[in-house]
Amino acid sequence: MSRNTSYQRHTISIPVGDSFCTAWLHLPTGVQRPPVVVMGHGMGATREMRLDAYAERFAARGIASIAFTYRNFGDSGGAHRQELNVKDQLLDWEEVLAHARSREDVDGSRIAIWGTSFGGGHAITIASRHPELAAAVAQCPFTDGLLTALRTSPVESLRLQRLLIRDLVATATRRDPVCLPLAGAPGDVAIMTAPDALPGYQSLVPAGGTFVNSTRARAIARLIRYRPGRRTKKIQMPILFCVSSTDTVAPAGPTLKYAHRAPRGIVQTYKAGHFDFYTGEPFEQLVAEQTEFLAKHLSPQAADGAR
Image (cartoon, rainbow, N blue to C red):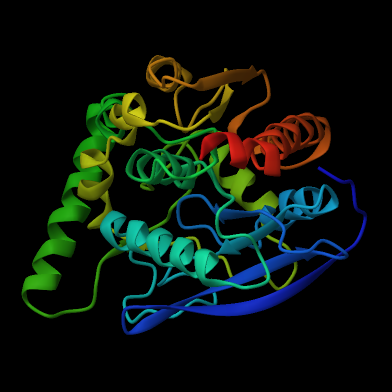
């Protein structure tokens, strides 16, 4: 696949139900109908939190991308702001994929998916449902909400359960939702309280970014029930797992167990932490390896061989 150095970035709106997802379309210049990667971000984040850094490198190799923000977050639509709903986010993925297939300026027969953190879990789920995809990348993926929850201390679990109950009661009585931070310091009541969680999120937000450190407490129950790692054995296309061996948010143990079940999986581990994957030397290593992986499996020759 040819190397390129320039691209155009367009902000687009993709209809989903009665709302929309806002996305960036990165198009490499001088490439006729390039392959395309659909890209999804982490839990409660937005595409502005370094998805563009990866997309720019992919474009330099002649690979287009559509990096989108889930409904109810950032500058995407949605009436239930800051609500983390797994079912809805998977529908966002499906509609963005359908949009990618329908575009005339990219090759809808050569599509890959890329997800990071919670989006990495979604990439696993979507890959298991779409054997026609050319490839997938799951970066520091969320793979098992139940096993992650079991690592939480009894005191912290009780505090989270109380917020969950209050939010469910608020919903039933049509009162304002009860929210909590996505990331907090150790000892705080938040979805993530690892020492690197709050500074990690903050380090990824650009000036003027749309990230809000809050979600509805009902997300707690949804996260525990979500176990995308159990679907890896159903993934038929090549999938690259990029795993942090020191991950405090998405524990490496369950992730590696699930990753090795993927029939065509490639597993790479890194000593960098969960939030270190987006900048500096870890980013340079990751993006180089991911670009080579995508270029290989999105090439015209690979597409012809898959038919």
